Amino acid sequence: EPRIGRDDVIKGTDDDAIISKLSAVDLGYLDDPFVKYFVKRPSRRPPLINRGSYLRTASLDNLTEQFIKTSVGPSTFPVNKQIVSFGCGSDTRYFNLKKNGLSVHKYFEIDFPESTAKKAVMIKKNKDFTDVIADPDLKLGLGGTELYAKDYCLLSGDLREFTETIVPKLKAHGFDTSLPTMFLSECVLIYIQPQDSDRIVEWVGANMDASLFVLYEQINPTDAFGAMMLRNLHARQIELPGIHAYPSLKSQEERFLSRGWLAAKAVSMNTLHDSIPETELRRISNLEIFDEVEEWQLLAGHYCVAWAIQARQGPPEREDER
Ligand code: SAM
Image (cartoon, rainbow, N blue to C red; front, side, top):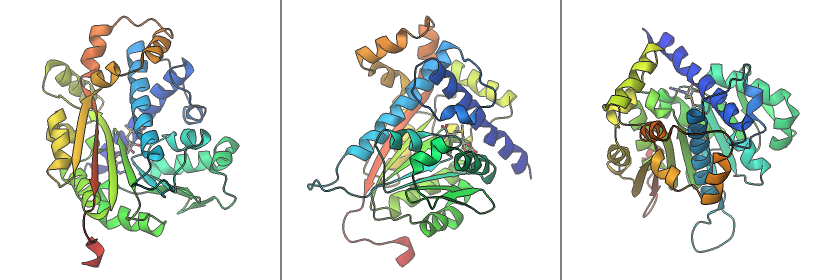
């Protein structure tokens, strides 16, 4: 069973993501006082990568903020909401949002136990994190691989065992299928076989009363640049099984629409780059020399953000009540 070896490589992809994020933070692209705690050996990335990290984080932040701020239904009284982050790695979004006054009823993060153990210990011992969580009852669990607080739960598990393991675990920690919930997958579903990621999309679509799914991942594996990207990853033993099932913007939308979701939209990072406000574009352009415009467009055309919404119509009919 090569699963163990391959899983170790996949767990390592978080180190890459977080080093790149710190590079973008240190140069002033992003404001994030928490990411530095997760990087042992900081390394300055090239301008192309910094711009990519910036756009990825800013775009997903933007969607998350909209989800938190938008009121649901005609009334304006606040509705409890949840966020579930799949394959969270060292993601710091919960901390940045809450520090900036944006929080939800429950924010769940899920990753393999090896990843969550490191994160849980780091958070638990560091006042910068615990001050934001602001819960005197914050505690470690399951041999230090999990962390539980009033509005934040870091949970360990394998997303390939979603309905058997992850869903019951979420529910045991207060996850409520009747609350509007955002599911976030930032460079995660692409690493698991489509039959496993499809089960997640299907379960969410069928069992939540109202949900928003946001994902970020690679596309276009078959053109010259895409093939090179896959070869480079392959040399590091990283495979992207999901990219062949969802290789285009259209198929990213179809992965939701064919499973009964109400609406779905996928855009490339080029499109999102075009929508950066003028003043913000000027600000990041002043941070470092950036003249690889053609390379950037090529790279950005190989990543996308997709989002989909689903809302239950009619009387609830739950999987677990059938
Ligand atoms: N979402 C984070 C971000 O964007 O900074 C981390 C992205 S990293 C590229 C991929 C993460 O997904 C890793 O932390 C890895 O451990 C996690 N992951 C991949 N497959 C998983 C699985 N089957 N179950 C749980 N976590 C998984």
